[in-house]
Amino acid sequence: MTKTEQMKKIRDEVFELKNSPLYQYRTENGFFPVIGEGNHDADIMFIGEAPGRNEAKTGRPFCGAAGKILDDLLASIKVPRENVYITNIVKDRPQNNRDPLPEEIEIYGPFLDRQIKIIEPKVIATLGRYSMEYIMKKFGLESELKTISLMHGKSFDSGGLKIVPLYHPAATIYNRDLIKTLEEGFKILKNI
Ligand code: URA
Image (tube, rainbow, N blue to C red; front, side):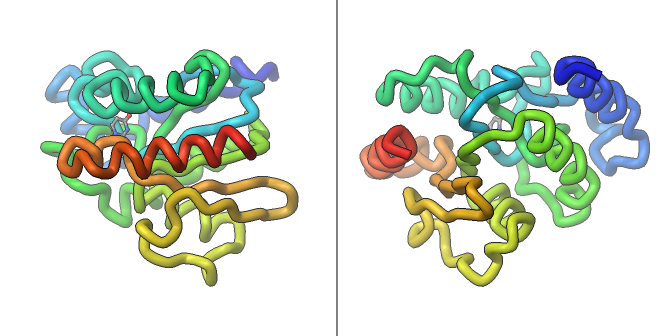
């Protein structure tokens, strides 16, 4: 199967994921699952948390307010969005943008694991606390976990794969001072 065919298979499976606690909320509201978007041969993979309203309406990751900030951050390091792959751990929108629950991360995590295998990125940039914790644990770096303020912009190595935890772009909506911090984090990413 080609990479695109493997991704489509993931999309079809998530579409039919009736045992997800978020399935009914999706179908009752005419939402779509958000699988991911971008270059299937990307060197950098960005992993966010879960779709927001705009994302669930369109099926595209990071296309609302947080997406605009992510686009600006990518532009600040001159990396075209088409060159990277962007996804989330949780593929369906949690009610009213609440934080994902452990059981939701558990049910959607295996799909993310498959996406990482398909893309084989050189660098994984996590956006926010939930994807940071999931990815650090998945790659055997649990003992390095600290609060996101201490992890942001640092690079961790797991068998040649680089993992760079970053604040979630939406954090800058509530704390404008974080924009500079995120820009610095993206510069570090660029250098890696
Ligand atoms: N926030 C996320 O974590 N992911 C999206 O796709 C949009 C907003």
